Length: 408
Image 1 (cartoon, rainbow, N blue to C red):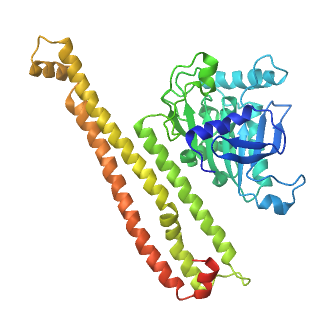
Image 2 (image 1 turned 135 degrees about the vertical axis):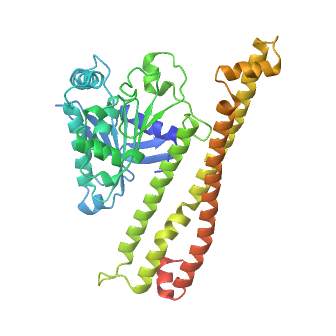
């Protein structure tokens, strides 16, 4: 499911909705993206979650039905409002407060029971949908549950991505094995934090579960709204506002996920092409050997093109803003010290550490290097596309039956 940052926040927000099995999950400008297949409401621990599948399954799905599901989304719900029913006690008293105390004070690692049941929910779903990759979403307490679940899973290779928002940092509560899993999945776990949100604690100079993304937020009307994504800002294309460097890191991680998706598509193709004897024909093997590169290059080429074009655009905008910042710095200094000459103003700025080299030249050089690297990769992909297509088409022409089966 290819969503932008804004749409992913909308997806995560569904965790707070009152849903029934079979209800559709809809995203603005896209429509229905899935259906509620299972509702988790653990009365003992307070954990609440929704299991979402892309297609609506029969009321009593067969093993064949379940095995056809290739993607599952798990939405972990955040804390119930204090005083609302009995569940808030399990969320706040039994989970949030003990976890927060350990995160702030350190000491013994003792994950709350809800964390463990959240992990069990994920692994149970992975056992049920044996051929599916999993996307995990969570906000606040749901983020903590998600952080723990993906770090504790028995099947880390089946985590497609995790999008976690405004949850305290639980890295210190993990054991060594869980930390290794979290590190392995670092480029697939996107941990969004608004520094104006008082709930998102434990991130100052600490290891984290996943890639930490400090957003460029605005001040919301109150603390609750700030916590509930009220400070989040998005560009016109739905990208979340953050630092230029983080935008580049995010885009590179997203490209890597798509490349891995293409390789899995190739593996499924290999299964389909395998004949009754259990072996690939010579032509089929040659096709797959070539296609491992072809799928990456041609299947991802358009995204690589657009992704690096976006990175280049971001870098060029950063260069423009950096140059304007230097000019503004000089202008403001001249306005304040109007009695000094231009060279005296420059000497004063230099003595205070505000040099042109530090403020403008070094950042501009950094971004120009990023642009050059992106341009180089784009050209390499374009050359490979042409070369690989020619090679594969030449091989397939030797086996018209295979070409017909593949419809190329």
